[in-house]
Length: 323
Image (cartoon, rainbow, N blue to C red):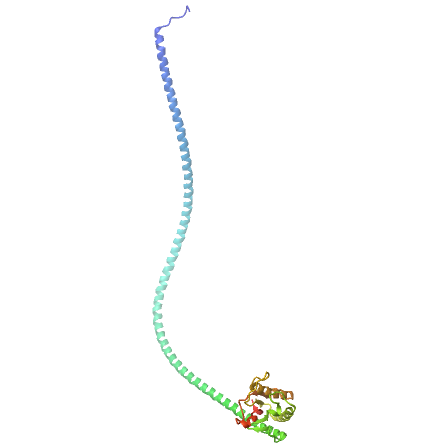
């Protein structure tokens, strides 16, 4: 303590000032540091933002580069197409020039051809007119020929019809001759009977000779009479040439008195049934059915309209005829 120097009042006054100054400096330093720190934080944030923006711009740049590459490729293709089109246009121009030259030549040829065509057209019109005249003459000749053909056909048909008619007439005459022989032979066989007679070109049997009253069944006497007729028909039929198509018509007739039974409702049925019965019997006895015809006339073809002669209308008629 002895060696200690006594404090000076001046040193005691400087220290607080130094401390204050130091504090101020420290505060300034702290402020600068804080300012730097804040600036550093802001700078880091700004850098991060810029990095993001740079990344985005780099991505856009890559897209632009890809688009540019694609555009360059398309431009290359387009350039190739343009080159091809230019070559095609060049070839087309050459062809067009050739076609124009050919067209010009064709035009000159067409003028010559048109003159030739006009001359040909005139000649063709003359030929067509001549052809129409010839066609008219041909049509007229054809019409005349057709008329002649029709006339010849008509004459031919007429001649054929006359020949057929003549042949038929000849056959009819020949059948008539055989009919006369047939009737003469029947008359000689049957003798003079009042119930069997010749009427014009028919041989007439009274119904009572063959059938009972109101019946269509042949009796024994009727069969006997028919046997004589069949015998004569076979003999005459064997003499008739095969080219003559002859028939024996068997016609049934009744009188006007009506009949009404379960078997025969009217005279139509009775007359037809009697004619059919005779034909069937003749076929049974050997007459070819192609030479027989059965017909029923009922009461509508009487021989007599007199009341006292009414019985004569009940009859069976035989007629040898040509078909």
